[in-house]
Length: 312
Image (cartoon, rainbow, N blue to C red; front, side):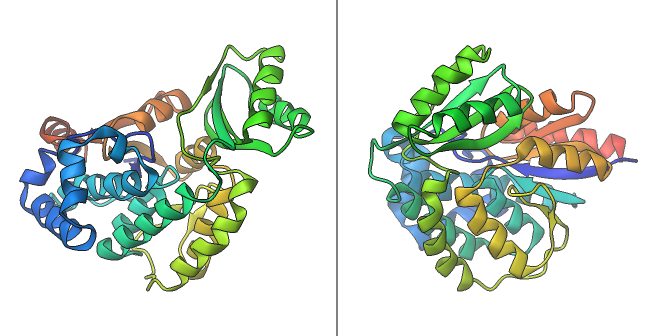
C-alpha cells in the first residue's frame, strides 16, 4: 500500500465563486464564518461574487485560496482521511501547515493576508515581472538567466515540472532572458500577469519583514512532515519552518524536486485540495503513474472518497 500526500495550490488558481459547494458543508460554513470575523464581510463577498480584479489582488488572493484549500482538506479530515505527507506550491505551503497542525487556521488567515500585503508592495508596480519558459531543460533556463543577469536581476522562480520553469526578476532582465531562452530552443515563453517578481532576489527585503510576522506565530510540531519549497525536503520543527517560509519568498519553488522526493518516500496517491487543478496537471507530468485525486467541489470530493474507500 503506497502513501498518501495532500497538496495545496498557490496563487493563480483563484476564481470568483470557488469553494461555493464546500461552504455549504458544516465545517466549510464554520471556516467561512471564522474568515468573515477575521477579514470582514467584504472579503467573503469578494470570493463569492467578485469583482474579479479585486480578488486578483495578491492581498486578497492569498487568504482566499488558503480558505478554500483548508475547507477542501477539512472534508477529507471529517471523513477520517489522514495524509502521510503534505506539500503546497508557494502560498500553498501555508495551507499545508494548517493541514499538518503546525499552524492554526485563524492565525494562517492573518499571516497570509500580511504576506499578500507585503508581496504586493515589495517592488514598485511595473518594475518586476515573471515569465513561464516552456519546452526547455532547467539547466538551459538557468543559463539564460545567467546570461541575462548582465541586464539586471533575473532567476528561476518555479521549477514546476519537466519543460516548465518560471523565471522572475527585473522587467528588462526577464525580457532579455526570454529572448535568450528562445535562442536556446524554448518552445514558448509566456509573460505572467502578476503584481511583482515573486521568488526572486528582489523579494529578500520583504522576506525579512515577513520573518517578523512569522516569529509572532505560535508554531506547533506538525502531525506529519511538510515538504518545503526551498529544498524539497521534510520540515518538522518550528525553527526550520520559519526559515523555510522566509527563504521561500526570494528563493525558487522546487515543486518538481518536492514531488520526486515524495515519490522516493513511497507516495503513490496525491490529492489536490483547493481551487483548480494546476498541481494535478504538474504531478501528472512529473509522475504519470501516480493516482491523482482532487477536492474542489461536491463531485470531486465524492469521487476522491469513493476511490480512497476502495483502495485503502
